[in-house]
Amino acid sequence: MLMMISPGAGHTYPMVPLGWALQMAGHDVLVASCGPGLMMGEAGVRCVDVAPGLSLTQMQGKLAQQRPDVIARLNNDALDPDYHETIGMAVAGALRLQPDMVEAMIRTAEEWRPDVIVYSPLLTPALVAAAKLGVPAVRNEFGLVRTDDSPQLMREMHSDLFEAHGVELPEVLATIDITPPSMGAIEPDSWLMGTVPFNGGGVLPRETYDYLTGARRDTPRIAVTFGSGPPPVETARVVQNVVAAAPHMDAEFVLAAPNVDLESLGTLPDNVTSLGWAPLVSLMSCSSLVIHHGGPGSAFGAIMSGLPQIIPEFGGLGRPLIMDAVVGRGVGVTAPPEEVGRELLESVLADDKMRTAAQEVREEIRGLPTPLDIAGRLADLVERSGGRAG
Image 1 (cartoon, rainbow, N blue to C red):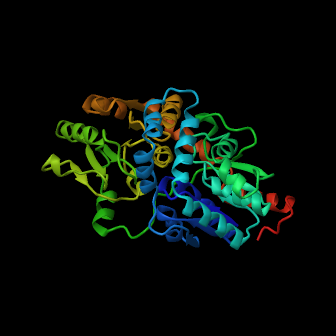
Image 2: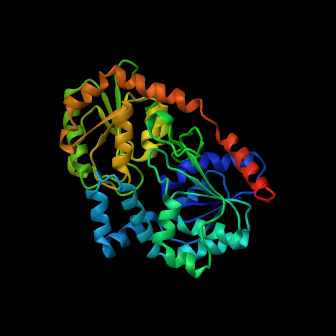
Image 3: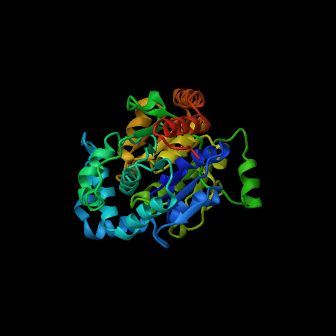
């Protein structure tokens, strides 16, 4: 089986548990990706680097330089009912600017000759490769961000790629969705899968471990994180407000934001600790509230820890859709960056309904099919399609 993943941490992490499950079920698994996508290798799944040195951040930077109109739509079309098409346009544009990566992915599939391709959303070369090989293409959704019509959208936006390889869309398409049913509409034929939070592995420094496990049970801890990619411009304002509120609150604050410049803040208050990188699962397990950038991994991490969450109203890829899902289910709130301060923090900490809602969704997720269940469905799909499921 071949997993094809866009070179971003947020694209990779949701696919790690399925990679584990496929290997545990005895399948021969290879991941074709580059940059942060190779973290699948650190998680124990064999990878091939299709574009050494390339990352999603670089792709986005090149897109911003050459297609500022697309970036403007991403930031301004949050209320557009067809916002998902704007996301598709951004991904399609970024891929067009990386033809070597696209062709390397397709070539890798032809060399590996898998019985099925499992891919991250909006990754057109996976669809082209599956069509050329005559195997099923199975999309592993991010969760909370719907890309229901993405195969048709990619066929339209990358028509030149399909035509160059002489193919149409694969005959067999399927979707794995980790969105809890209570947090969004699910495509009718999707395979539901319970999310297993993963935010990277590695050795946890002893001092970090001691700090995380030494939380005072009678004092709330507020975790602040802004993902693995370049933080939104408004992030500095949020961090400034949080740090300013800290001396006036009976709470601990943890800044797990390695990509945010903290030097301009001077000496941090005694109840504020900067950890730099920290695995979110470990941090959230001993926190009371999470402030984050609106990524699906952070949103799911908070939910699986039974925590309320605050998402500043940043623009960007998919964030408006995630904010809608979080607020709609009552597991968190959004606010303009300038309003993320003491009043809002104390209000959310005191909101028992929000915490209860997060715990309800956590139990809902635990009742969904597991990655091992989905590994079985993939094997059945391959068998029905005439493959060997090996």
